[in-house]
Length: 206
Image 1 (cartoon, one colour):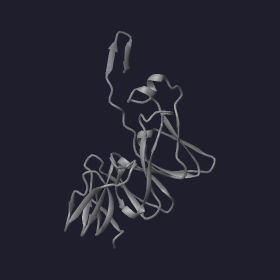
Image 2 (tube, rainbow, N blue to C red; image 1 turned 180 degrees about the vertical axis):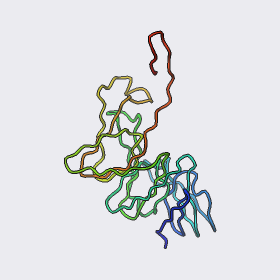
Image 3 (cartoon, helix red, strand yellow; image 1 turned 30 degrees about the horizontal axis):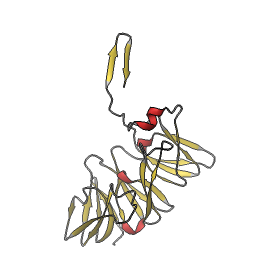
Image 4 (cartoon, one colour; image 1 turned 180 degrees about the horizontal axis):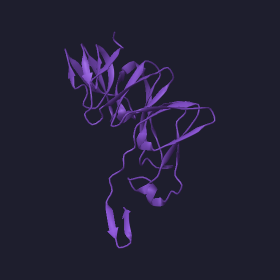
């Protein structure tokens, strides 16, 4: 059927229809595939996603993010746009940038909203589904977040300096707080590249 997806051997296969796909997708297809940019005056996820119309089967995969997760949109789903691999185009209801630093777009997270159907995400690590009960708070590193239900998270950092706001690297040890009830999908966190200076009394990162 038009809205079905099959996941096998690291590939997500869809049939004829209109799809929301990540960049450089589909990797293979039968028939024809018409690829367009998302249209609109302000489209927050335009840089991460494409609108693809297929006349036959198409396969999606990302060699840098080989772990695929099928997330049914039983509730409204917010997914990190750069981690969306494929979803029915009709399921998208909008997009936004979540600012993790007050008054700054540095390190903002592009998010695509879905209200029906499903979304398949592609991540560098395996995805974990975490249920957060009403009254609970889940703290998670921003780069580990894949998708969630419920309200948007709030950002937290113990100490925020002027440089944290101005520099593109963003603040170190930033966390996102998810307040239940909600469900959060996450992947493993990756250490950001840094230079290490060696000194007589030890070492420190810069």
